[in-house]
Length: 87
Image (cartoon, rainbow, N blue to C red; front, side, top):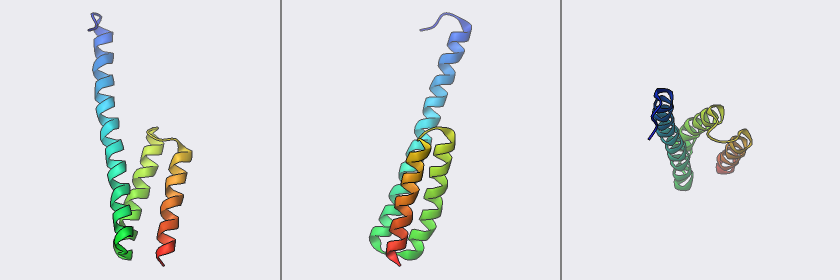
């Protein structure tokens, strides 16, 4: 446990950021899973709608540094291929 005021503040901030990052990463995973289930069901309309949400959340995660930009590009590319294969 920190004794210095600035160290206490830093400890609190790191806990807040950790919780926010965890929530954002969970949201990202959820969006991708919803897209995958829509593709597995073969529902093109639902897949397109969830695709838009998933791509937006992947971009947000890359911008915030939760995932690497190349990882984001890889995820988006894989999702785009799945959408195109449905046609």
